[in-house]
Amino acid sequence: MRTVKLGKSDVVVSAAAFGTDLIGSRIDQATSFQLLDVFAEAGGTFVDTGNIYACWLPGCSGGESESTIGAWMKERGNRNRMVVATKLGFDYPGCEGRLSAAEIERECEKSLRRLHTDRIDVYYAHRDDPNTPLEETMGAFAALVKAGNVRAIAASNLRVWRIAEANTLCQERGWPQYVAVEQRHTYFRPRHGASFGPQLAVNDDVREYCRARNLTLIAYSILAQGAYTRGDRPVPEQYAGPDADERMEVLKAVAAETGATLNQVIIAWMRQGDPPMVPIVAGSRVEQLRENLGGLEVALSAEQVNRLTTAGNPDVKKAWLR
Image 1 (cartoon, rainbow, N blue to C red):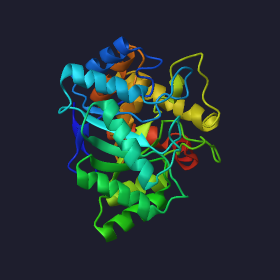
Image 2 (cartoon, one colour):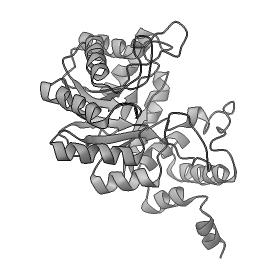
Image 3 (tube, rainbow, N blue to C red):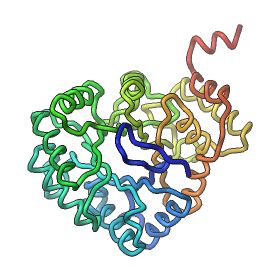
């Protein structure tokens, strides 16, 4: 599997990350270990988790994913090969969901214990905390990096201006800056005014900022909960409409041309876009995960990437009709 350097850091990750929000909860430990093994055997090194996973499920209180990953790395003896990213910023039992210095230090310690490790490779601010001074938040992250508990920091579900503000402050103070941005992204485009609650979708501002400042863009929820391939999963309302219909037509055409599945084409399109993205892949079954990993081997032509990207654009459609 190809590798990617996260921004200006020295952290090198696999071209896809493994999403683990249901690992150790809805997906039992035996299956979780099997999925992690498949990912690692395919050359995957980048594992994406969070302190709250999966507190929203009955019987879960958060930390289940981290604990399962930690147990897997301990049993396999592969900690030094894996690149582990985790997050804080949402509330769950025993955690207020803040980015205060005290909470950052406390949650980092809890994550380290669950993961059976002495360091977090990538530590995310999982959402913004406007009630904590930015200097306090970024100073606390800097202290963790200086202590060796964290290698690099990143932002998820933060608006571009807040990321830029944070990185400018850190540059002035000589502190570590955010090196990556993880946002919601899929092939369908959100409708005007669509809301995903606290989750923020990739937009042109994010792309341009990451391209200009050399931040790596990481995408989650890339397959829209199965809406591309499952008849029982309608297109989410945030995307549904003529634009999604037109993009689906082009997606199916490119899949037919390449012999790849729809999901694989989406993953290839993200990897070969401008800027290229690191997709977070997942699967509750081995065959699902293998299919998604296969998307990393699909090579799209420049024309196919452009056709996928511009599908649904009114000006492009008019040009096609002329």
